[in-house]
Image (cartoon, rainbow, N blue to C red):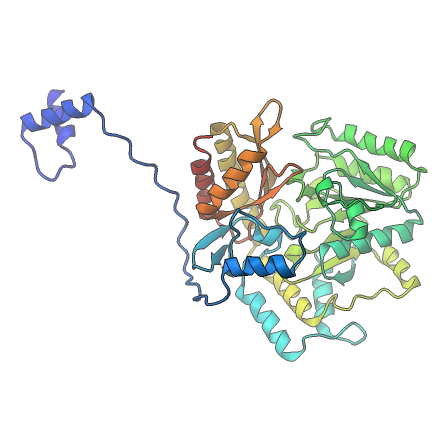
Length: 479
C-alpha cells in the first residue's frame, strides 16, 4: 500500500522523484493541503460570427440623448445600460464587440433568431420592389401571408386582420367581442398583461402598468396560478369564482373573456390545467366570446403545441398574436371566425400599416423558417433539457422557489423563504447584474420583479442551455 501511495504522489510530475522525496511530498500535502483554486468562469459556447467594428455613438452619449429627447417613462435594464449594436441568431454584441447570450429574445419577439438570413432576404427583396401600399390596392404578399397563417389555426379561425403590435391586436379583439356579443363587460385575469393603450391598460391586471384612468367595464378575476394562487392547481375552484363573479358582479351578460395561457409579463405563469375549458363554457353561456392572447406564447415556443391555448384543449373565438410573428418586425394579427368578423363590416375598419408588403413578406418568411427548421420540436427538446437542469439547480439553491413553463417559455421565481414564498426582490436585482457580467441576458417579470424570464430566440441550443444554468449556478453561489 505504501508503494501505491508513493506512486500516486509522484504521478503527473515532470520527473520521477526518489522514494524519499515522494514520501516527503505526500506527507507535506496531507499535513497542509493546497488552497483550492478559484472556480473557473462558465464558458459560452463557441459561435462562428465576427461582429462588424462599431464606430457609432457611444453608450454614454446615447443615454444622455435618450434622457433629453425620449419620454421619461422609458426604462432600461442594468445599472450601466448596454449599448447593443449587432445581433446574430441567439447572440447579441455590444459596442466593444463583446458577445452575450440572449435569453429574452427582444422581450419574446425574436423567434427565428437575430438577423436570420431568410427573413432578412425576404424583407430586402420586397423593399426593393415596393415598400408600402395600403389595402385599398391589391398585393400578393398580404393574402399569401394570411393564407399561411390561417392554415396554422384550428377550427373555423380563418379570417385574419393585420395590425402593428400586440396592443393593437388586443384592442381590435376587444372591439370585436363587444360588437358581436352586444355586451360591454370584459373579463380578464389578475396578473395578466394585454398592452399599454388606454383600452388595453384596462384589461391588464398588474398595477405596475396601469395609469389612474377609467378602465371601463373590466372585471378582473382570480389568477389560476398553481404556485401562488389561493386554490393552487385546482382549476375547478378558479372557474367557479369566474361564474360567481359574472353572477354577482355583472348583469349576468359579458362581452368576452381574455387570457394569456402563459402569462408573460406576470412572470411566466402557466394557468392551472383544465381552467380555460371550464371558463370558456361559462363565458359563452353568459353571451361572451373567448379571446386567447398568444402574443408571447404562440408559434411553437411552448414546444408541446403551436399555440399556447392548445395546452388547455380549447379553441377560442378570437386569437391575438404579435412579437414572434415578425421576428422583430412591427407586426401583429387578429384571427377569428367569419361570423365574428362580419360585425366589423358595419363600418370601415382600416389599418394604414397593417399587412404592408414588407411586413407581410417578412411574416411569411418567419412561418416558413419555423417549419423548415422544425422549431417547435426543437423548443420541446431543448426546453425539456433546460427544465431538468433548472430543477436540479433548484435542489442546490434555496433561493429558487419555482421553475415553471414549457419549451422555451420558462420562468424561475426567486424567493427568500420557500415556505412563505417571500419575493427575493433585492437578490434578483443583484443576480441580474452578475449574470449580465457573465454574458447572460435575461428578462424579469412578476409584480415584484423576482422572476427570471427565459424566452430566448428559438434557435437556442442545449449548449446554450447548459451555459445559462452554469452561469446561474456560479452567480448564485454564496447566496
